[in-house]
Image (cartoon, rainbow, N blue to C red; front, side, top):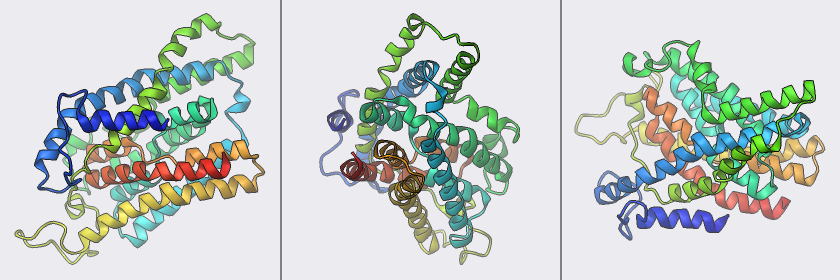
Amino acid sequence: MACIVALGWVIQRRGLLAGSTLPRGAARGGADDRSESGASESGAGARQILATLSFTICAPALMFSTLAATDLAHVVSRGAAVTWVTTAALALVSAAVARWVLRLSAGPVAVTTLAAVYVNGGNIGIPLAVYLFDDALAVVPTLLFQLLVLAPLALAVLDRSAPANGAPRTATRSSWTSVARVPLAAVRNPITVGTLAGLLVAVIGELTGLRLPDVALLPFDLIGAAAPPLGLLTFGMTLAVPMPALSPPAAQGGVRHGAASGPAPASAPWWTGRDRVLVRAVVALAVLVRNVLHPLAAWAVGTAMGLDTPALAVVVTMAALPTAVNVTTYATRYGVFDGVTARATVWTTALCVPVLVVVGVLLG
């Protein structure tokens, strides 16, 4: 796994799929790093193509073939309960901190909460589940909870608070024009479609005793087999991408009225005053929850519920996954904390590597 991730890093860093190379010694991020950002953009297309191929075709095929041939008892288990309980609890804690400690308004609270608890179960979770546990089902409880519960709730809040956030009405409601369409948009996620389709076939099999023949699942198995290596390559390529630029939180409606001392003068940089502290606090909250609190909570609750070591390793590993890129997609669509969530994604992705190593040493 480490070799595949390292290969992805080299591909992106050297521009092997784009014909360009990132300059050595370039600073990661910053408004003046135009040469590095330009070089990284030239490789963004290849990275995006690999990620899209894995996310929209290979991973859904893998989830369908795996679930269609499985016993549903493996999906609904004590390990799944640990995942759901810990994720829900930390989502509530993150929302409370964002609202009453950081004094954010509803939309930024939703985005901050997603950055803290919505994990990359597709491009990273599926490869880890396959390579570490030889079972793609390990990521199913995580995917179901966040795609069917977290995303609809957060997007409903963002949809209702869009005018207050100052985002253009036409931009924020182009795809989800009403709260009723938000759950539908989440269910249309390709991995969700593959997962639900596989679950439907499994349920029908349980009720009728009829199962799809192996020859019918073979094409899905072949295509799905590409999902783990593509996901790890994309993971490594992401680690080589420079830190994304930030947008001023105050300009995104992130601070409650009266919480800040007022806008900075036009000649002053945007990070003066409270905004700089706020950006760091949001990113730090996401890193703390994703890389520390969630794995610890999964270990504590799983131990209390009597999970054996292999099952405990599964839930802790899935809890240590980094923030999903989807969070930045949602934030960008609604114009709320997009640069901030992108930084949270990069930091949690980079830091999840040593966390996973520790988990493997302790529970492997």
